[in-house]
Picture 1 (tube, helix red, strand yellow):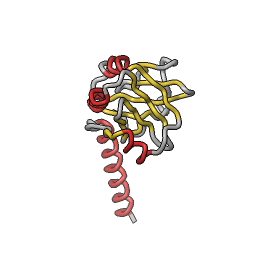
Picture 2 (cartoon, one colour; picture 1 turned 180 degrees about the vertical axis):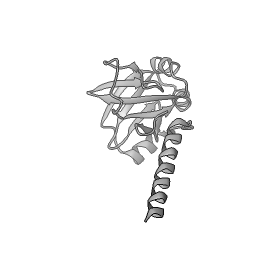
Picture 3 (cartoon, one colour; picture 1 turned 90 degrees about the vertical axis):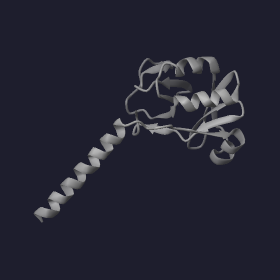
Picture 4 (spheres, rainbow, N blue to C red; picture 1 turned 60 degrees about the vertical axis):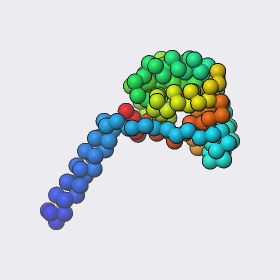
Length: 149
């Protein structure tokens, strides 16, 4: 009985340490580019879209080193930096429990470069948030929390 308890305790500690370690390590490149047609087929139609000037988005991306986070809350676009500080949105802070979609800044820049459109759309679909510029759409974001830089 005592050996089982110790074994369970050790496994629990190992699991927690792995979770903490995963939270503190780099997430790598987060996000994948699709054509708009592929995104529509994979993720369904856009239910809500909010446009942002691409130059504005580029400037916001320059304010965060590795990751940028998006969400639409009460029909307003929020953009956060890697530390979850609000870069754009009607409120100056958001709850730490509010889930945002996280993408690598490098993949957002790639989207902008390939899309070459003056406006970028942050889109809510059935179960995902996508970012579209021109004929390209970005998805496969991480949810923060639980996975935050």
